[in-house]
Every structure is written in structure tokens, then in C-alpha cells.
Image 1 (tube, rainbow, N blue to C red):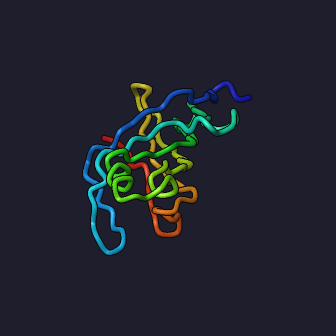
Image 2: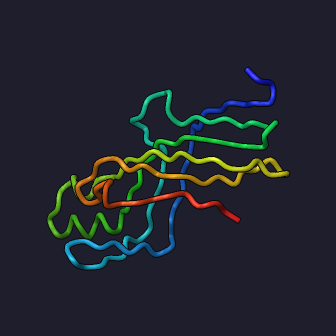
Image 3: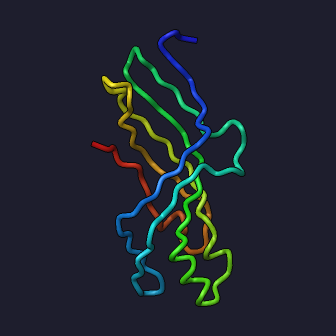
Length: 132
């Protein structure tokens, strides 16, 4: 192992997207409400890892996550739709970016969606954009 590379395991991650996200379903638009992102507890011990390469000042990480949308799921449940529509979306986020001078990271990357009845991966896109 290179002394300038530090590997790590992510053990906790919780984030909430509060900005409006408009979803189109059956020709109608819906406000998704808040979307919660958490580590997927059902994934293996080999998931949720990364590396910090201080010689290149570059960080990379892979997160296996669940995205939930409680308000929108509640609306769908009230319409009589089942778990295949209201359940979480499972996804893998692969991100990378610079290690900043204060040792924080500016990570961004793709989000590969798993199968979901309401959000087919071939029609649904998600990404992590770099913060400022």
C-alpha cells in the first residue's frame, strides 16, 4: 500500500434533498417533497468504501444508498398503490474529486439506479454535483 493513500469505509450517511423535485407520472406532474438518502443497510460489507490519495490530492468513494420520498409515497399509498411503487430506490453512487486544503472533499459523480417500478433506470437520472 502506498503511504500517501488512505482507504476508508463509510459507516453512516444521511442526507435530505429539500429543493423541489418535479416528477412526471402518467402525464401529470407531482412535487416529490423531501427526498432522503441513506446508506443501504441490506448491502454487503464490501460496499461503501473509498480512498484518499494525498499525493494526487484526489478522493474517490462508492456509496450504496436508499432514496426514499415519504410525502410522495404517502400520496401514492392513498391512491392504493403498493410497495413496488412506494418503496425505496436502491442506487450506487460513485463519486470523486479534489482533496481541498482544509482536508474536506469536493466530490461529484454518477448515481446508478436499481430497478424500481415507478423510476425505471433507463428513464431516471441522478447525480451528485460538487458543492461550493
